[in-house]
Image (cartoon, rainbow, N blue to C red; front, side, top):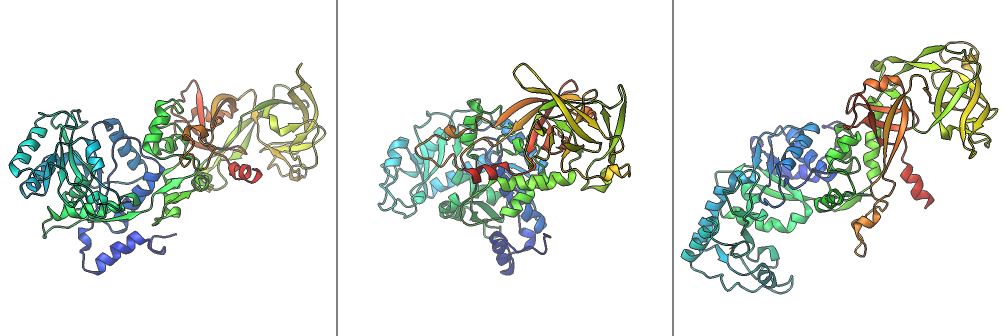
Length: 561
């Protein structure tokens, strides 16, 4: 769907309405403001696509701002990962900003509010403050320190800044309304003491501003016109506006906060706290584990920026929270990989097949189309010989009429090759089939134009020449959780729904053209799914990740259940 033909979402309607009322288009500015306390996940991708997409639509600048006001959980590693993810998705930010850039200005404004009698230092414990907040139906109780003198508040706040007090000994609160129906307006915290080094300011500060005090003022300093956030911040909008009221200059752009629904995703969790638990408890190998819903994990698994952006556009922007089935994301990556991924042959569960009437020691190189969806992809040569590997599942001694693969006395075509007929099989001491013997029709070679080559058989199998096969490690990834909403059960821990089969590691054989494959290269293993080369791969050992199967097998499982 083209940008001009699609209908506007409600966020774009807000912007269009503002423009129609005279807001100057050249003053539009957006931002994406992540906290660097973890890696970005698929939910963030929707927000990234929204804000940067608005920038593209309106030719307006978009800032990347790090909300780095909590040194306890924030690290430079996360900053670097976020920048890498946004760039990988194909977006460019106008200015790289940090809330920590504004620490001095925020402090100066806080001093101004104290001088105006609109903020005070509270010396109660966090538990006492919480008890005095009241309830949604009952007003709060004023702090005994609410009416301290301006002079005492200034002295204490300066002492907080200079590190004279312990953590928790004092906080700075805005003086608003303890009887407000919006509990967030009941004298919210503006600053707390934290004797922790910051990833950018080190130990320059030991007081740190709270989110609500920081966010709107940062938007204002950057002259962001529209500040979009998820629906849980809807109640914060009144406080956002109150704080802006204290500092806004009429000659400058006043930011407008509006909210959209958070997207939850089936068979996963997107809470950074939950994701950190998975990492710390060793359930996954790290933030970029291919089973993680992080953008880093999806990238490593083989997802493409195009598929994630198409997914974000499909689910759109809504006003109500809902759960999006992860199979929709899988659909989009299949759609894109189908267009770009070369077709290759790989045998994941090998069974040796011997063509008894094929000339001993002979080999030939068959021509194979790289991608039927892309004429420019060309062709490659693949080796064929007397001994091949096929999939264990592609042979049965006896089978019913609906089994269209190889069985004793039955015929199939080898992809790009010949028609073969199974004649016998060899078993080990336990009765397992270890080798299949067959004959081939020399005149049935695909593309040769002979009458025999045009003969139709119902089954076509992929294969790899034993002599030329390249061994590879293949990691078969599946959904990390068996339950659709693992984080929604009040009586169970989300960890109880970990899928024990979310990763299977096997040794497989791939065609020799893959010996030169590079990290990140993507392929369709014919009849098996889409795979990409993992970062653990080396010239000595190829490692492939399964990105997604050719079909949605989970849908079938749910139907059976």
